[in-house]
Image 1 (cartoon, rainbow, N blue to C red):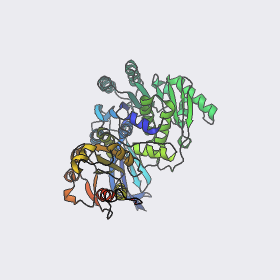
Image 2: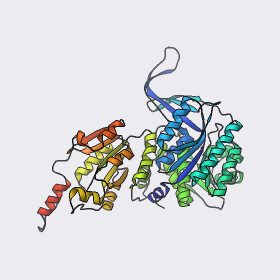
Image 3: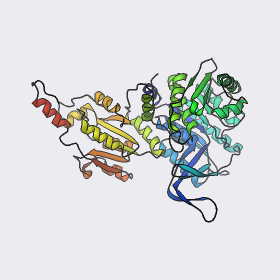
Image 4: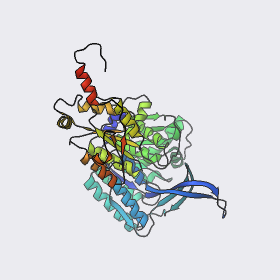
Amino acid sequence: MIIDEILKKIAGRRVLVVGDIMLDRYIRGTAERISPEAPVPVLKVREETSSPGGAGNVALNLLTLGARVEIAGVVGNDPDGKALVKELKDSGAGTSSIVTDPGRPTTTKTRLVSGTSQIARMDRETSAPLPKNIEKALAASIKKTLSKFRPHAVIISDYDKGAVTESLVREIVKLSGKAGIFVSADPKGLDYSKYLGVDAITPNLSEAESATGIKIENEASLKKAAERLLDITGAYVAVITMGGKGMSYFSSDGEHGSVPSLAREVFDVTGAGDTAVSVFTLAYVSTGDLGASVTAANAAAGITVGKSGAASVTPGEMLSHFRAAGEEDSSRFKTRKELANILSGLRARGKKVVFTNGCFDLFHAGHIRLLNDARKLGDVLVVAINSDASVSRLKGRERPYVAESGRAALLSSLGCVDYVTVFGEDTPLELIKELRPDVLVKGGDYKPEDVVGKDVVEAGGGEVKIIPLVDGLSTSSIARKIKRDSGKSGNKI
């Protein structure tokens, strides 16, 4: 099953994430000297950012891939808790199942980063099990969400911070089993009997060894450890992530396999497990194909470790990864609703979204220059094209020369383009309001004050960029040349 088919199937799937939600805070700067007060580096602070971590990062991964997400967990009655819930809401996650415990702090991890290196981390947390009244309130909120949201899957993200108790897992498994909902668990700790009844268990190599007491040194010991995991948890499948060696999976009905990772630079392993369980679960409940789902998860985790901090993976990155590996893909086209969900997740990860639009009829070198230059202005490039009906209204009844499906396919094939969508209005104003890009790009035939959507983008803190045109190149000039040379032989455009 090719990756673009998987990505199409997972968009819009509903997932409930349950677990330890936390706030990841990053204080970045440069450390060029040692403090005179103690033998420690002095960090000259450049910026401070934060994003949801733990189960929150699982939610962001799912949102980035176009899923609909509700999240259940516990925060403290403190500023960090309020900030965490707001960031999750802003990313597009449903937060009505989050419970506040006034007796514990919001789990917060503050990382001090100099350049690309983490020089210190400060943790504010308690790992004590939830008080019974808070656990009962969390279970009730999960039950309500399962009934109303009706997810295709539940992901239990356990970071051993007290939210994921054995009794809570038992309740989730019971309720999900009655509703036919797939349950994955990304585990922590030594006693995996607490996850009894889940459908999938996704430890890393070290966690699998610790939970089973089996040193994994070869294929035989790997198989033995996986069988032990299935026996302890009663799961249908165990997916074991093995770092640079890729992933292996073993199911209770005998299906098994290993997926090697593509060689790439490892920048930061933070959050790779979150990405793996997110992509595997989404892919499996969408396709029912174990091998394809593990392959997709392995690719996503491999991309994540090449980024700084806990990160998520875009569909465009997944497609590029498989193209590099030799697998074909066909489209980055998204509906505007799918795209709005994806971009919400990307913005929550601090990604800069660039947007440009046009008819892109009779594609030429000027378009290539515009798109390549636009891509350099941010992390993700979205190209919106006018529908056929819209082009006809704007350009005349003989236009477009190329149907919207062909124009979308051509743009989707370009490496500089991450997403393509179609809008039917005469201007992209409503689409810009929905997508909220950080950078709005137009060609040099526009003045900044005449760009549709300028006020919307700037009101959100974004900017408008004008990219110079290639002299003498335009769809109109090409069309005139075609008409002028019609009937003549030997002429080339």
